[in-house]
Image 1: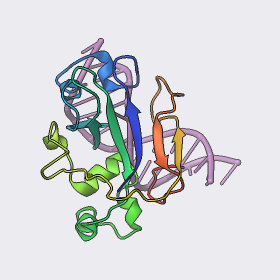
Image 2: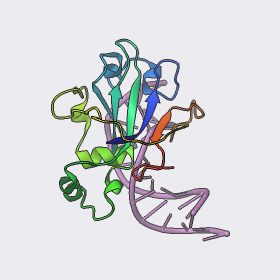
Image 3: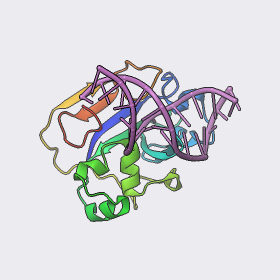
Image 4: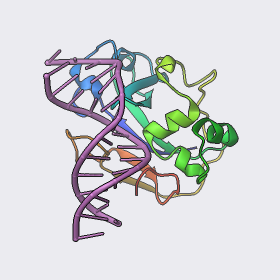
Length: 157
DNA sequence: CAATAGATCATCT
DNA sequence: GATGATCTATTGC
């Protein structure tokens, strides 16, 4: 269950990869919504985004943290992790490692198939908080990070 | 505790 | 050649 996301708006958002235009890396962002934009960062981490705007408008949503609801033992084994379950997925680079999501999933659909993101059947009761995005320089004050307030799996408060 | 450093490489200039 | 939508370990108070 996804508990922390950030929005990246595209051409006017200088923190967004797509603000510099369409390249081999960013081309999927300019396509239809519901596809995976997976990028490699800092020489060692993969991050997962959902393409989220109409064709030609390169908006996307970075998945920053989630609570595992299934497959926990496989994730623990894959990461050799003996700590709290949220520690597997409380960060954009950590959740992809736990779920074995890599750039080989670039462009894959997220509305069907192996990487399906399911809609919540019933929305849990919780409060939402909005904060600036993490780890960026440009547009550092834009309120585009959305979290389930107080959830234990957040990457930060 | 908070702040900083180091790892490590695809991508873009 | 510089940078970065991160993470972990280490240092310092």
